[in-house]
Image (cartoon, rainbow, N blue to C red):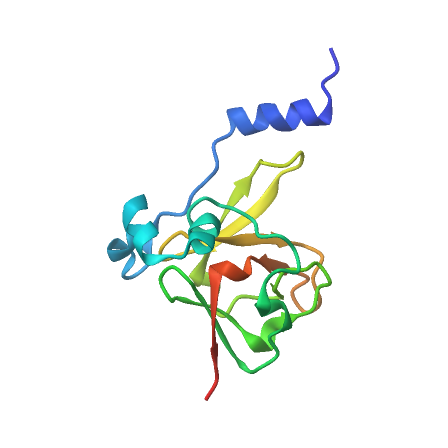
Length: 159
């Protein structure tokens, strides 16, 4: 009996658990193991929706889309450096996009089966806050597009 792509993707989502990176492997991660109530006290409602509920903000709603100053982008949950302005580019997607992280080990990845096709989600390696998804349609030299939710980041201008 033939199986549709949609049904196959749903079966995969049920049968194959997502691989999560352990926060304990990142220095200082233990202090970021907070309860949902503690996270709600620290974050705005939009930040909580993105970082803890794995939400996605609407395209073109983040002020970070138009941010052109030199500086760095940090996790809104734990302030870990995630991206640099030198790696930011306009992807035309409506979300802040970068072609590489500031440090490879500052991001963890896992499979995301919420859509019809699997995607690669990435998160902060220290607090495990959801940031966005990475795609293979970015510019050289990496060919990657780290498509980030603006509410998951805090921009720090270079002084």
